[in-house]
Image (cartoon, rainbow, N blue to C red):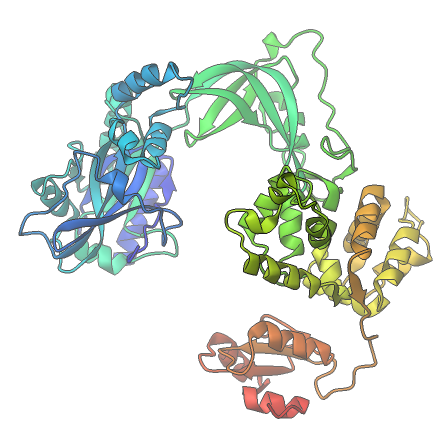
Length: 640
Protein backbone atom coordinates (compact mmCIF):
# COMPACT_ATOMS: atom_id res chain seq x y z
CA UNK A 1 0.00 0.00 0.00
CA UNK A 2 1.46 3.38 -0.98
CA UNK A 3 -0.47 4.89 1.95
CA UNK A 4 -0.80 2.50 4.94
CA UNK A 5 -4.21 0.99 5.68
CA UNK A 6 -4.44 1.74 9.38
CA UNK A 7 -6.92 0.33 11.87
CA UNK A 8 -9.37 2.41 13.90
CA UNK A 9 -9.33 2.84 17.66
CA UNK A 10 -12.43 1.42 19.35
CA UNK A 11 -14.76 2.94 21.92
CA UNK A 12 -17.47 1.00 23.75
CA UNK A 13 -19.66 3.45 25.68
CA UNK A 14 -21.40 6.80 25.35
CA UNK A 15 -18.83 8.24 27.77
CA UNK A 16 -16.01 7.02 25.53
CA UNK A 17 -17.59 8.82 22.57
CA UNK A 18 -17.88 12.05 24.55
CA UNK A 19 -14.20 11.70 25.49
CA UNK A 20 -13.27 11.17 21.83
CA UNK A 21 -15.12 14.31 20.73
CA UNK A 22 -13.56 16.29 23.58
CA UNK A 23 -10.06 15.08 22.67
CA UNK A 24 -10.55 16.19 19.06
CA UNK A 25 -11.67 19.63 20.22
CA UNK A 26 -8.65 19.93 22.55
CA UNK A 27 -6.22 18.93 19.81
CA UNK A 28 -7.72 21.49 17.42
CA UNK A 29 -7.99 24.15 20.17
CA UNK A 30 -11.73 24.53 19.50
CA UNK A 31 -14.10 26.02 22.03
CA UNK A 32 -17.41 24.29 22.85
CA UNK A 33 -19.15 26.86 20.63
CA UNK A 34 -16.98 26.23 17.55
CA UNK A 35 -18.63 24.04 14.92
CA UNK A 36 -17.26 20.51 14.62
CA UNK A 37 -19.07 18.13 12.27
CA UNK A 38 -18.68 14.34 12.24
CA UNK A 39 -19.88 11.73 9.78
CA UNK A 40 -21.41 8.56 11.22
CA UNK A 41 -21.86 5.34 9.25
CA UNK A 42 -22.43 1.64 10.02
CA UNK A 43 -19.23 -0.39 10.41
CA UNK A 44 -19.58 -3.22 7.92
CA UNK A 45 -18.33 -6.59 9.16
CA UNK A 46 -16.41 -7.71 6.08
CA UNK A 47 -12.93 -7.77 4.57
CA UNK A 48 -11.06 -4.47 4.13
CA UNK A 49 -9.95 -3.84 0.56
CA UNK A 50 -7.89 -1.28 -1.36
CA UNK A 51 -8.56 -0.78 -5.09
CA UNK A 52 -5.88 1.09 -7.05
CA UNK A 53 -6.84 2.97 -10.21
CA UNK A 54 -4.21 4.38 -12.58
CA UNK A 55 -5.32 6.43 -15.59
CA UNK A 56 -8.80 5.68 -14.22
CA UNK A 57 -8.44 1.93 -14.77
CA UNK A 58 -8.44 -0.71 -12.03
CA UNK A 59 -4.89 -2.11 -11.89
CA UNK A 60 -4.54 -3.82 -8.50
CA UNK A 61 -6.62 -4.87 -5.52
CA UNK A 62 -5.13 -5.84 -2.16
CA UNK A 63 -6.35 -6.83 1.29
CA UNK A 64 -5.26 -4.85 4.37
CA UNK A 65 -2.61 -7.41 5.40
CA UNK A 66 -0.30 -5.84 7.97
CA UNK A 67 -1.35 -2.35 6.88
CA UNK A 68 1.66 -1.89 4.61
CA UNK A 69 1.58 -5.05 2.50
CA UNK A 70 -1.57 -6.95 1.66
CA UNK A 71 -2.56 -9.97 -0.43
CA UNK A 72 -2.98 -9.33 -4.16
CA UNK A 73 -6.51 -10.41 -5.11
CA UNK A 74 -6.90 -8.38 -8.31
CA UNK A 75 -8.14 -11.23 -10.51
CA UNK A 76 -10.85 -12.13 -8.01
CA UNK A 77 -11.93 -8.53 -7.37
CA UNK A 78 -12.53 -8.06 -11.10
CA UNK A 79 -15.31 -10.66 -10.86
CA UNK A 80 -17.40 -8.51 -8.47
CA UNK A 81 -19.92 -6.73 -10.64
CA UNK A 82 -20.43 -3.81 -8.24
CA UNK A 83 -16.80 -2.70 -8.57
CA UNK A 84 -16.16 -0.38 -11.55
CA UNK A 85 -13.32 -1.43 -13.85
CA UNK A 86 -12.88 2.17 -15.03
CA UNK A 87 -13.63 5.57 -13.50
CA UNK A 88 -15.16 8.66 -15.20
CA UNK A 89 -13.08 11.59 -16.46
CA UNK A 90 -13.56 13.71 -13.33
CA UNK A 91 -11.73 11.08 -11.21
CA UNK A 92 -8.01 11.59 -10.41
CA UNK A 93 -5.41 9.90 -12.62
CA UNK A 94 -4.29 7.91 -9.58
CA UNK A 95 -6.55 7.00 -6.68
CA UNK A 96 -6.79 4.18 -4.11
CA UNK A 97 -10.44 3.50 -3.28
CA UNK A 98 -10.88 1.73 0.03
CA UNK A 99 -13.84 -0.10 1.46
CA UNK A 100 -15.26 -3.42 2.57
CA UNK A 101 -15.99 -6.60 0.66
CA UNK A 102 -19.01 -8.27 2.29
CA UNK A 103 -21.88 -10.67 1.75
CA UNK A 104 -25.53 -9.94 2.48
CA UNK A 105 -27.20 -12.23 5.01
CA UNK A 106 -29.77 -13.63 2.57
CA UNK A 107 -27.03 -14.36 0.03
CA UNK A 108 -24.97 -16.03 2.76
CA UNK A 109 -27.79 -18.35 3.83
CA UNK A 110 -28.50 -19.27 0.22
CA UNK A 111 -24.81 -20.05 -0.33
CA UNK A 112 -24.70 -22.10 2.88
CA UNK A 113 -27.63 -24.19 1.70
CA UNK A 114 -25.95 -24.76 -1.65
CA UNK A 115 -22.56 -25.64 -0.14
CA UNK A 116 -23.97 -27.88 2.60
CA UNK A 117 -24.54 -30.55 -0.05
CA UNK A 118 -20.75 -30.84 -0.48
CA UNK A 119 -20.09 -30.66 3.26
CA UNK A 120 -18.47 -27.21 3.09
CA UNK A 121 -19.92 -24.32 5.08
CA UNK A 122 -18.79 -20.99 6.56
CA UNK A 123 -19.33 -19.76 10.13
CA UNK A 124 -20.73 -16.34 9.19
CA UNK A 125 -21.03 -13.87 6.28
CA UNK A 126 -17.65 -12.28 7.03
CA UNK A 127 -15.79 -15.60 6.84
CA UNK A 128 -17.76 -16.45 3.74
CA UNK A 129 -16.73 -13.19 2.05
CA UNK A 130 -13.08 -13.63 3.01
CA UNK A 131 -12.97 -17.26 1.91
CA UNK A 132 -14.72 -16.50 -1.36
CA UNK A 133 -12.34 -13.67 -2.19
CA UNK A 134 -9.21 -15.73 -1.52
CA UNK A 135 -10.08 -18.53 -3.95
CA UNK A 136 -7.29 -19.59 -6.31
CA UNK A 137 -9.80 -19.83 -9.15
CA UNK A 138 -11.48 -16.48 -9.98
CA UNK A 139 -14.43 -18.39 -11.42
CA UNK A 140 -15.22 -19.68 -7.93
CA UNK A 141 -15.15 -16.11 -6.61
CA UNK A 142 -17.39 -15.03 -9.48
CA UNK A 143 -19.97 -17.61 -8.40
CA UNK A 144 -20.15 -16.14 -4.89
CA UNK A 145 -22.50 -13.16 -4.19
CA UNK A 146 -19.85 -10.65 -3.03
CA UNK A 147 -20.50 -6.93 -2.71
CA UNK A 148 -18.41 -3.84 -1.96
CA UNK A 149 -19.04 -0.63 0.01
CA UNK A 150 -16.61 2.26 -0.65
CA UNK A 151 -15.93 4.59 2.29
CA UNK A 152 -12.31 5.87 2.21
CA UNK A 153 -9.26 6.47 0.04
CA UNK A 154 -5.47 6.18 0.13
CA UNK A 155 -3.08 7.77 -2.37
CA UNK A 156 -4.54 10.29 -4.81
CA UNK A 157 -2.91 12.40 -7.52
CA UNK A 158 -5.13 15.39 -6.71
CA UNK A 159 -7.31 16.60 -3.80
CA UNK A 160 -10.52 14.63 -3.44
CA UNK A 161 -12.71 17.34 -1.94
CA UNK A 162 -13.27 19.39 1.18
CA UNK A 163 -15.26 16.98 3.37
CA UNK A 164 -15.49 13.26 4.05
CA UNK A 165 -19.17 13.31 3.18
CA UNK A 166 -18.66 14.99 -0.20
CA UNK A 167 -15.89 12.56 -1.23
CA UNK A 168 -18.08 9.55 -0.46
CA UNK A 169 -20.83 11.15 -2.56
CA UNK A 170 -18.26 11.36 -5.41
CA UNK A 171 -17.66 7.63 -5.00
CA UNK A 172 -21.36 7.06 -5.62
CA UNK A 173 -21.21 9.24 -8.74
CA UNK A 174 -18.30 7.11 -10.02
CA UNK A 175 -20.40 3.94 -9.75
CA UNK A 176 -19.42 2.60 -6.32
CA UNK A 177 -21.95 1.39 -3.77
CA UNK A 178 -21.84 3.56 -0.64
CA UNK A 179 -23.74 3.17 2.61
CA UNK A 180 -26.98 5.15 2.53
CA UNK A 181 -27.00 5.24 6.36
CA UNK A 182 -24.04 7.65 6.44
CA UNK A 183 -25.08 10.97 8.00
CA UNK A 184 -23.53 14.15 9.47
CA UNK A 185 -23.94 15.49 13.01
CA UNK A 186 -22.55 18.46 14.91
CA UNK A 187 -23.29 17.42 18.51
CA UNK A 188 -22.31 14.43 20.63
CA UNK A 189 -25.96 13.92 21.55
CA UNK A 190 -26.98 13.63 17.90
CA UNK A 191 -24.12 11.20 17.17
CA UNK A 192 -25.19 8.95 20.04
CA UNK A 193 -28.85 9.09 19.05
CA UNK A 194 -27.86 7.90 15.57
CA UNK A 195 -25.74 5.11 17.08
CA UNK A 196 -28.59 3.81 19.24
CA UNK A 197 -31.01 4.00 16.31
CA UNK A 198 -28.71 1.87 14.15
CA UNK A 199 -28.13 -0.52 17.06
CA UNK A 200 -31.91 -1.00 17.36
CA UNK A 201 -32.20 -1.68 13.62
CA UNK A 202 -29.12 -3.90 13.50
CA UNK A 203 -30.96 -7.20 13.18
CA UNK A 204 -33.13 -5.84 10.34
CA UNK A 205 -30.22 -4.64 8.18
CA UNK A 206 -29.45 -6.88 5.18
CA UNK A 207 -25.76 -7.12 6.16
CA UNK A 208 -23.76 -7.66 9.36
CA UNK A 209 -22.35 -4.65 11.20
CA UNK A 210 -20.39 -4.50 14.45
CA UNK A 211 -20.59 -0.81 15.29
CA UNK A 212 -20.71 2.75 13.95
CA UNK A 213 -17.70 4.69 12.64
CA UNK A 214 -17.32 8.40 13.41
CA UNK A 215 -15.01 10.65 11.35
CA UNK A 216 -14.24 14.36 11.46
CA UNK A 217 -15.96 15.62 8.32
CA UNK A 218 -13.64 18.46 7.21
CA UNK A 219 -10.54 17.10 5.47
CA UNK A 220 -8.39 20.07 6.47
CA UNK A 221 -9.14 19.25 10.11
CA UNK A 222 -8.35 15.57 9.47
CA UNK A 223 -4.96 16.67 8.14
CA UNK A 224 -4.30 18.80 11.24
CA UNK A 225 -5.26 15.94 13.54
CA UNK A 226 -2.99 13.48 11.75
CA UNK A 227 -2.23 9.95 12.90
CA UNK A 228 -0.97 7.92 15.82
CA UNK A 229 1.32 4.99 15.04
CA UNK A 230 -1.56 2.65 14.17
CA UNK A 231 -4.69 4.75 13.85
CA UNK A 232 -5.98 8.19 12.83
CA UNK A 233 -6.83 10.76 15.51
CA UNK A 234 -9.81 11.95 13.51
CA UNK A 235 -11.82 8.70 13.52
CA UNK A 236 -13.00 5.99 15.89
CA UNK A 237 -15.25 2.93 15.83
CA UNK A 238 -18.08 2.76 18.38
CA UNK A 239 -18.48 -1.01 18.84
CA UNK A 240 -21.74 -2.65 19.83
CA UNK A 241 -22.00 -4.44 23.16
CA UNK A 242 -21.17 -8.12 22.97
CA UNK A 243 -24.10 -10.48 22.48
CA UNK A 244 -24.69 -13.06 25.22
CA UNK A 245 -26.14 -16.55 25.45
CA UNK A 246 -26.52 -19.43 27.93
CA UNK A 247 -25.05 -22.91 27.44
CA UNK A 248 -23.42 -25.86 29.26
CA UNK A 249 -19.73 -26.68 29.81
CA UNK A 250 -19.29 -30.25 28.54
CA UNK A 251 -15.54 -30.46 29.17
CA UNK A 252 -12.44 -28.41 29.93
CA UNK A 253 -9.43 -29.13 27.72
CA UNK A 254 -5.89 -27.79 27.97
CA UNK A 255 -4.16 -26.25 24.97
CA UNK A 256 -0.39 -25.67 24.98
CA UNK A 257 0.86 -22.65 23.07
CA UNK A 258 4.14 -22.22 21.26
CA UNK A 259 5.73 -20.65 24.33
CA UNK A 260 4.59 -23.50 26.57
CA UNK A 261 1.66 -21.66 28.18
CA UNK A 262 -1.17 -23.97 29.27
CA UNK A 263 -4.53 -22.41 28.38
CA UNK A 264 -7.82 -23.99 29.49
CA UNK A 265 -10.63 -24.08 26.93
CA UNK A 266 -14.29 -24.76 27.72
CA UNK A 267 -15.96 -27.20 25.32
CA UNK A 268 -19.55 -25.99 25.16
CA UNK A 269 -22.91 -27.31 24.13
CA UNK A 270 -23.29 -25.56 20.73
CA UNK A 271 -25.10 -22.23 21.02
CA UNK A 272 -25.68 -19.37 18.58
CA UNK A 273 -24.27 -15.99 19.62
CA UNK A 274 -24.44 -13.05 17.24
CA UNK A 275 -25.24 -15.29 14.31
CA UNK A 276 -22.29 -17.64 14.95
CA UNK A 277 -22.44 -21.14 16.44
CA UNK A 278 -20.08 -21.18 19.44
CA UNK A 279 -18.69 -24.48 20.75
CA UNK A 280 -15.53 -23.30 22.56
CA UNK A 281 -14.60 -20.46 24.90
CA UNK A 282 -11.30 -19.47 26.46
CA UNK A 283 -10.97 -19.79 30.24
CA UNK A 284 -7.62 -17.92 30.25
CA UNK A 285 -5.85 -19.56 33.21
CA UNK A 286 -6.41 -21.51 36.43
CA UNK A 287 -7.22 -18.39 38.47
CA UNK A 288 -9.97 -17.49 36.00
CA UNK A 289 -11.50 -20.94 36.46
CA UNK A 290 -11.35 -20.51 40.25
CA UNK A 291 -13.02 -17.08 39.95
CA UNK A 292 -10.01 -15.07 41.12
CA UNK A 293 -8.47 -11.94 39.64
CA UNK A 294 -4.78 -11.06 39.51
CA UNK A 295 -4.82 -9.96 43.16
CA UNK A 296 -7.09 -12.74 44.40
CA UNK A 297 -10.24 -10.63 44.16
CA UNK A 298 -13.47 -12.32 42.90
CA UNK A 299 -14.03 -11.71 39.19
CA UNK A 300 -17.54 -13.14 39.01
CA UNK A 301 -20.58 -12.59 41.18
CA UNK A 302 -19.93 -14.23 44.56
CA UNK A 303 -16.59 -15.54 43.23
CA UNK A 304 -18.10 -18.57 41.47
CA UNK A 305 -15.66 -21.09 40.05
CA UNK A 306 -16.32 -22.87 36.74
CA UNK A 307 -16.93 -26.62 36.70
CA UNK A 308 -17.69 -29.24 34.09
CA UNK A 309 -21.48 -29.50 33.86
CA UNK A 310 -22.07 -25.86 34.80
CA UNK A 311 -24.57 -23.75 32.90
CA UNK A 312 -22.68 -20.61 31.91
CA UNK A 313 -23.35 -17.22 30.36
CA UNK A 314 -21.05 -16.54 27.42
CA UNK A 315 -20.47 -13.58 25.15
CA UNK A 316 -18.48 -12.87 22.03
CA UNK A 317 -16.23 -10.02 23.17
CA UNK A 318 -16.09 -7.49 20.38
CA UNK A 319 -18.40 -10.01 18.69
CA UNK A 320 -15.30 -12.12 17.99
CA UNK A 321 -13.73 -14.02 20.92
CA UNK A 322 -16.11 -16.16 23.00
CA UNK A 323 -15.72 -15.68 26.76
CA UNK A 324 -17.39 -17.22 29.81
CA UNK A 325 -18.80 -14.39 31.94
CA UNK A 326 -20.45 -16.24 34.81
CA UNK A 327 -22.24 -19.39 35.83
CA UNK A 328 -25.88 -19.99 36.74
CA UNK A 329 -25.44 -21.43 40.27
CA UNK A 330 -28.96 -22.83 40.61
CA UNK A 331 -28.34 -25.03 37.54
CA UNK A 332 -25.07 -26.55 38.84
CA UNK A 333 -25.26 -30.40 38.99
CA UNK A 334 -25.00 -31.87 42.48
CA UNK A 335 -22.00 -34.00 41.48
CA UNK A 336 -20.02 -31.17 39.82
CA UNK A 337 -16.50 -31.11 41.25
CA UNK A 338 -13.98 -28.22 41.32
CA UNK A 339 -11.65 -28.36 38.33
CA UNK A 340 -8.09 -29.42 39.19
CA UNK A 341 -5.61 -27.67 36.90
CA UNK A 342 -2.93 -30.09 35.63
CA UNK A 343 0.65 -29.74 36.85
CA UNK A 344 2.00 -31.73 33.91
CA UNK A 345 1.88 -30.97 30.19
CA UNK A 346 -0.83 -33.02 28.43
CA UNK A 347 1.36 -33.29 25.32
CA UNK A 348 4.77 -34.35 26.68
CA UNK A 349 4.12 -35.09 30.38
CA UNK A 350 6.78 -32.60 31.48
CA UNK A 351 6.21 -30.58 34.64
CA UNK A 352 4.04 -27.50 34.17
CA UNK A 353 5.24 -24.80 36.53
CA UNK A 354 3.71 -21.52 37.61
CA UNK A 355 6.18 -18.89 38.65
CA UNK A 356 5.49 -16.55 41.53
CA UNK A 357 3.57 -13.48 40.41
CA UNK A 358 2.38 -15.08 37.15
CA UNK A 359 -1.09 -16.32 36.24
CA UNK A 360 0.10 -18.71 33.54
CA UNK A 361 1.36 -22.24 34.08
CA UNK A 362 4.01 -23.30 31.54
CA UNK A 363 5.35 -26.60 30.24
CA UNK A 364 9.05 -27.15 30.97
CA UNK A 365 9.33 -29.70 28.14
CA UNK A 366 11.16 -27.19 26.02
CA UNK A 367 12.89 -28.95 23.17
CA UNK A 368 10.78 -32.11 23.21
CA UNK A 369 7.21 -30.82 23.64
CA UNK A 370 5.36 -31.30 20.32
CA UNK A 371 3.09 -28.34 21.04
CA UNK A 372 6.12 -26.05 21.16
CA UNK A 373 8.32 -27.83 18.64
CA UNK A 374 8.19 -25.60 15.56
CA UNK A 375 8.62 -22.43 17.61
CA UNK A 376 11.58 -23.97 19.48
CA UNK A 377 13.26 -25.02 16.22
CA UNK A 378 12.64 -21.58 14.74
CA UNK A 379 14.24 -20.01 17.79
CA UNK A 380 17.17 -22.46 17.71
CA UNK A 381 18.14 -21.48 14.14
CA UNK A 382 17.43 -17.75 14.57
CA UNK A 383 20.05 -15.11 13.87
CA UNK A 384 21.16 -14.61 17.47
CA UNK A 385 21.20 -18.34 18.25
CA UNK A 386 22.76 -20.80 15.78
CA UNK A 387 21.96 -18.56 12.78
CA UNK A 388 21.48 -21.32 10.19
CA UNK A 389 20.80 -19.76 6.80
CA UNK A 390 18.18 -21.48 4.66
CA UNK A 391 15.96 -22.60 7.53
CA UNK A 392 13.17 -20.06 7.53
CA UNK A 393 9.60 -20.43 8.75
CA UNK A 394 8.32 -22.17 5.60
CA UNK A 395 11.22 -24.61 5.49
CA UNK A 396 10.81 -25.49 9.18
CA UNK A 397 7.08 -26.12 8.70
CA UNK A 398 7.86 -28.36 5.72
CA UNK A 399 10.49 -30.43 7.54
CA UNK A 400 8.40 -30.68 10.70
CA UNK A 401 5.32 -31.94 8.84
CA UNK A 402 7.23 -34.29 6.52
CA UNK A 403 5.93 -37.86 6.73
CA UNK A 404 9.15 -39.46 5.44
CA UNK A 405 11.76 -40.10 8.13
CA UNK A 406 14.56 -39.02 5.78
CA UNK A 407 13.06 -35.52 5.55
CA UNK A 408 11.68 -35.06 9.04
CA UNK A 409 12.96 -32.47 11.57
CA UNK A 410 11.12 -32.67 14.88
CA UNK A 411 13.85 -31.34 17.19
CA UNK A 412 17.11 -29.36 16.85
CA UNK A 413 19.31 -32.49 16.73
CA UNK A 414 17.40 -33.67 13.64
CA UNK A 415 18.78 -30.65 11.76
CA UNK A 416 22.30 -32.02 12.04
CA UNK A 417 21.38 -35.59 11.07
CA UNK A 418 19.39 -34.54 7.98
CA UNK A 419 22.37 -34.77 5.61
CA UNK A 420 23.34 -38.21 6.97
CA UNK A 421 19.78 -39.50 6.54
CA UNK A 422 19.62 -38.15 3.00
CA UNK A 423 22.94 -39.75 2.04
CA UNK A 424 21.75 -43.10 3.42
CA UNK A 425 18.74 -43.27 1.08
CA UNK A 426 18.82 -46.31 -1.23
CA UNK A 427 19.12 -45.81 -4.98
CA UNK A 428 15.55 -46.96 -5.54
CA UNK A 429 12.34 -45.28 -6.64
CA UNK A 430 11.16 -45.15 -3.03
CA UNK A 431 14.48 -43.64 -1.97
CA UNK A 432 14.37 -41.11 -4.79
CA UNK A 433 10.94 -39.92 -3.63
CA UNK A 434 12.47 -38.93 -0.27
CA UNK A 435 15.39 -36.99 -1.72
CA UNK A 436 15.33 -33.35 -0.67
CA UNK A 437 16.62 -32.10 -4.02
CA UNK A 438 13.53 -33.66 -5.65
CA UNK A 439 11.13 -31.72 -3.44
CA UNK A 440 9.41 -28.70 -4.98
CA UNK A 441 11.12 -25.53 -3.76
CA UNK A 442 14.45 -27.27 -3.26
CA UNK A 443 17.10 -27.99 -5.86
CA UNK A 444 20.57 -29.47 -5.93
CA UNK A 445 22.27 -26.11 -5.38
CA UNK A 446 19.97 -24.96 -2.57
CA UNK A 447 20.31 -28.33 -0.80
CA UNK A 448 24.12 -28.11 -0.95
CA UNK A 449 23.96 -24.58 0.48
CA UNK A 450 21.64 -25.73 3.28
CA UNK A 451 23.89 -28.63 4.25
CA UNK A 452 26.94 -26.33 4.15
CA UNK A 453 25.17 -23.82 6.41
CA UNK A 454 24.28 -26.60 8.86
CA UNK A 455 27.82 -28.02 8.89
CA UNK A 456 29.18 -24.52 9.49
CA UNK A 457 27.34 -24.48 12.83
CA UNK A 458 28.67 -27.74 14.21
CA UNK A 459 30.92 -25.58 16.37
CA UNK A 460 29.20 -22.61 17.98
CA UNK A 461 29.79 -20.21 20.85
CA UNK A 462 28.66 -21.53 24.24
CA UNK A 463 26.38 -18.51 24.78
CA UNK A 464 24.70 -18.92 21.36
CA UNK A 465 24.14 -22.62 22.00
CA UNK A 466 22.62 -21.92 25.41
CA UNK A 467 20.40 -19.14 24.06
CA UNK A 468 19.26 -21.46 21.26
CA UNK A 469 17.91 -24.00 23.77
CA UNK A 470 15.06 -21.58 24.47
CA UNK A 471 15.11 -21.91 28.26
CA UNK A 472 12.65 -19.49 29.82
CA UNK A 473 14.28 -16.28 31.15
CA UNK A 474 17.60 -17.11 29.47
CA UNK A 475 17.82 -14.62 26.66
CA UNK A 476 20.99 -13.39 24.97
CA UNK A 477 22.20 -11.35 27.94
CA UNK A 478 21.69 -14.04 30.57
CA UNK A 479 23.18 -16.69 28.27
CA UNK A 480 26.33 -14.58 28.01
CA UNK A 481 26.44 -14.06 31.78
CA UNK A 482 26.25 -17.79 32.40
CA UNK A 483 28.77 -18.56 29.66
CA UNK A 484 31.30 -16.07 31.01
CA UNK A 485 30.97 -17.43 34.52
CA UNK A 486 31.14 -21.16 33.79
CA UNK A 487 33.27 -20.85 30.60
CA UNK A 488 32.18 -24.34 29.41
CA UNK A 489 28.73 -25.74 28.72
CA UNK A 490 29.60 -28.94 30.55
CA UNK A 491 30.49 -27.07 33.74
CA UNK A 492 27.25 -25.10 33.65
CA UNK A 493 25.16 -28.21 33.01
CA UNK A 494 26.85 -30.08 35.85
CA UNK A 495 26.10 -27.22 38.24
CA UNK A 496 22.46 -27.01 37.08
CA UNK A 497 21.90 -30.75 37.47
CA UNK A 498 23.53 -30.83 40.91
CA UNK A 499 21.81 -27.69 42.20
CA UNK A 500 19.19 -28.09 44.92
CA UNK A 501 16.73 -25.23 45.22
CA UNK A 502 15.71 -23.87 48.65
CA UNK A 503 12.72 -25.71 50.10
CA UNK A 504 11.57 -23.20 52.70
CA UNK A 505 12.56 -20.42 55.04
CA UNK A 506 16.08 -20.76 56.33
CA UNK A 507 17.06 -23.11 53.48
CA UNK A 508 19.56 -21.48 51.14
CA UNK A 509 19.94 -24.44 48.80
CA UNK A 510 23.23 -26.19 48.16
CA UNK A 511 26.57 -24.82 46.93
CA UNK A 512 25.76 -25.27 43.23
CA UNK A 513 22.50 -23.36 43.65
CA UNK A 514 24.30 -20.59 45.48
CA UNK A 515 26.90 -20.40 42.73
CA UNK A 516 24.26 -19.94 40.04
CA UNK A 517 22.15 -17.34 41.88
CA UNK A 518 25.33 -15.50 42.84
CA UNK A 519 26.25 -14.71 39.23
CA UNK A 520 25.85 -10.99 38.59
CA UNK A 521 22.46 -10.35 36.93
CA UNK A 522 21.13 -13.91 37.24
CA UNK A 523 19.18 -14.30 40.50
CA UNK A 524 16.70 -16.94 41.65
CA UNK A 525 14.12 -16.70 38.83
CA UNK A 526 16.66 -17.38 36.08
CA UNK A 527 18.43 -20.00 38.20
CA UNK A 528 15.15 -21.83 38.84
CA UNK A 529 14.34 -21.89 35.11
CA UNK A 530 17.79 -23.33 34.34
CA UNK A 531 17.58 -25.98 37.06
CA UNK A 532 14.00 -26.92 36.08
CA UNK A 533 15.10 -27.38 32.46
CA UNK A 534 17.86 -29.84 33.29
CA UNK A 535 15.67 -31.60 35.87
CA UNK A 536 13.56 -32.97 33.01
CA UNK A 537 14.96 -36.21 31.58
CA UNK A 538 13.41 -35.33 28.19
CA UNK A 539 15.44 -32.13 28.03
CA UNK A 540 18.65 -33.82 29.11
CA UNK A 541 18.21 -36.41 26.36
CA UNK A 542 17.48 -33.71 23.77
CA UNK A 543 20.65 -31.85 24.80
CA UNK A 544 22.68 -35.09 24.66
CA UNK A 545 21.39 -35.71 21.13
CA UNK A 546 22.48 -32.19 20.19
CA UNK A 547 25.91 -32.54 21.78
CA UNK A 548 26.51 -35.62 19.64
CA UNK A 549 26.36 -33.29 16.64
CA UNK A 550 27.33 -29.82 17.91
CA UNK A 551 30.24 -28.60 20.04
CA UNK A 552 29.65 -25.49 22.19
CA UNK A 553 32.97 -23.61 22.24
CA UNK A 554 34.36 -22.63 25.62
CA UNK A 555 34.01 -18.98 26.62
CA UNK A 556 36.98 -16.87 27.63
CA UNK A 557 36.92 -16.57 31.44
CA UNK A 558 35.85 -13.28 33.00
CA UNK A 559 38.83 -11.20 34.01
CA UNK A 560 41.17 -12.45 31.28
CA UNK A 561 40.08 -9.85 28.74
CA UNK A 562 42.45 -6.90 28.55
CA UNK A 563 41.27 -4.01 26.41
CA UNK A 564 40.66 -0.25 26.68
CA UNK A 565 36.89 -0.87 26.90
CA UNK A 566 36.85 -3.86 29.28
CA UNK A 567 34.31 -3.31 32.04
CA UNK A 568 32.84 -0.21 30.38
CA UNK A 569 29.22 0.29 29.32
CA UNK A 570 29.02 1.21 25.62
CA UNK A 571 26.06 2.43 23.55
CA UNK A 572 26.02 2.38 19.72
CA UNK A 573 23.69 4.85 17.99
CA UNK A 574 23.13 6.08 14.45
CA UNK A 575 24.29 4.31 11.28
CA UNK A 576 27.51 2.30 11.32
CA UNK A 577 29.31 2.13 7.98
CA UNK A 578 32.09 -0.42 8.55
CA UNK A 579 30.10 -3.03 10.47
CA UNK A 580 26.56 -3.98 11.35
CA UNK A 581 25.07 -3.17 14.75
CA UNK A 582 25.21 -6.88 15.70
CA UNK A 583 28.89 -7.09 14.67
CA UNK A 584 29.70 -4.00 16.71
CA UNK A 585 27.90 -5.42 19.73
CA UNK A 586 29.66 -8.79 19.45
CA UNK A 587 33.04 -7.10 19.07
CA UNK A 588 32.53 -4.89 22.12
CA UNK A 589 31.37 -7.79 24.28
CA UNK A 590 34.34 -9.89 23.18
CA UNK A 591 36.57 -7.07 24.41
CA UNK A 592 34.91 -7.18 27.83
CA UNK A 593 32.51 -4.26 27.40
CA UNK A 594 28.83 -4.25 28.31
CA UNK A 595 26.64 -3.05 25.43
CA UNK A 596 23.47 -1.19 26.47
CA UNK A 597 20.49 -0.20 24.34
CA UNK A 598 19.93 3.18 25.98
CA UNK A 599 21.98 6.02 27.43
CA UNK A 600 22.00 6.56 31.20
CA UNK A 601 24.27 7.89 33.93
CA UNK A 602 25.93 4.46 33.98
CA UNK A 603 27.01 4.76 30.32
CA UNK A 604 30.76 5.22 29.84
CA UNK A 605 31.00 5.66 26.08
CA UNK A 606 28.71 6.42 23.13
CA UNK A 607 29.77 5.47 19.59
CA UNK A 608 27.71 7.71 17.28
CA UNK A 609 27.29 7.35 13.54
CA UNK A 610 25.33 9.46 11.01
CA UNK A 611 21.71 9.97 12.00
CA UNK A 612 22.31 9.70 15.74
CA UNK A 613 19.44 11.42 17.51
CA UNK A 614 18.07 11.47 21.05
CA UNK A 615 20.76 9.16 22.46
CA UNK A 616 23.50 11.51 21.26
CA UNK A 617 21.67 14.51 22.71
CA UNK A 618 21.22 12.80 26.08
CA UNK A 619 24.88 11.73 26.14
CA UNK A 620 25.94 15.35 25.62
CA UNK A 621 23.62 16.53 28.39
CA UNK A 622 25.05 13.92 30.79
CA UNK A 623 28.64 14.71 29.85
CA UNK A 624 29.31 11.20 28.51
CA UNK A 625 32.23 10.71 26.12
CA UNK A 626 31.09 10.49 22.48
CA UNK A 627 33.27 9.15 19.64
CA UNK A 628 32.64 8.22 16.00
CA UNK A 629 33.18 4.86 14.31
CA UNK A 630 36.79 5.58 13.23
CA UNK A 631 37.69 6.67 16.74
CA UNK A 632 36.13 3.47 18.07
CA UNK A 633 38.41 1.37 15.88
CA UNK A 634 41.40 3.42 17.04
CA UNK A 635 40.33 2.97 20.66
CA UNK A 636 40.22 -0.83 20.40
CA UNK A 637 43.39 -1.03 18.32
CA UNK A 638 41.91 -1.91 14.93
CA UNK A 639 42.92 -0.12 11.74
CA UNK A 640 40.20 -1.35 9.35
